[in-house]
Image (cartoon, rainbow, N blue to C red; front, side):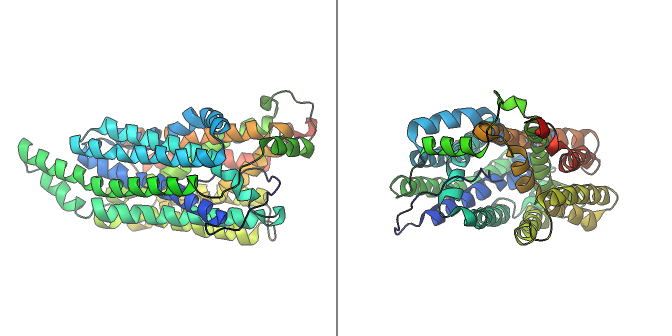
Length: 430
């Protein structure tokens, strides 16, 4: 998920060896890569730390709840440090979270894993808040959509790669280990589980070093600073309003709630599919790649949006169609079995792909001087990805992983309502 912001005046960017667009593209790659590693960590930690479904989905909760906790503080931090130093600091926070995986693995302590994930999420919140404005300032306003599309592709490709790479390292013999554990005594089982836990040490040590190096590159780069006074003036000129609070925009508040539900559904589709494949009898050696299929279908939908919006259909139409597809694919997944059912879960990526880029601009439309405050609320709504997957895990334990998908249908209905009427509420009186 990348946070798109209102277009702002382009600033002059000096030519240098480290092209700013490439640097920000690398950051969006990092967003996608680190975010979707959790899809593999959920089934991995479920085995290594002997967890049930609800406990394993605390992985998503710990990571995404940081967007709610750090949404406002990250803005304060950036005012103190500036945007470029803020990005560098954000990368160091993500590196610190990754580093915590080493003692967590050595001691097989789930709580330390969760702390590492929270710190990673806090770092990404700072990065998201700092880096997104650059997507629009690095060049003329009329080509901003092209740059946003480039960032989305960087994010999507990384998200597809991450589960494949980490899954190949830590889940390569997971099926054999699961079968073996039941026949081992306490001491033998402990040795095997400790060995499994240790598999994340090298990958996360490498991730930590790469993030530290990238932080140094950002710090010493020639990225331009953003003139916040200029941005405030531009936003105030865009819309004159008699409103005195961001909470006086009903279409924004509804949009925040809808985005909360959407982010939860997106993460459920990506993070649950590996375990769901195993539930359908598919070996983990194959199921570990399923998250990548979800993200590839999401990337395909994103490319469709780049080509077709607004040339062939509007973002409202895209949002309506996405909601319908989400409901259809969910129902088909619930009433089919085996690989066919898994394919329909993967296709939820296609249904979800155009929701973020459609909900966001509809929600901040007409906010004028409250655009920044509205954007902060929308960033905090990403915490839906913390709460709803946890609910899915609870339902999977008390029903089954297939029936638990029923919970996403109300979220898609809410998206459909927003596309039809919700984004218009209160606008006539603005």
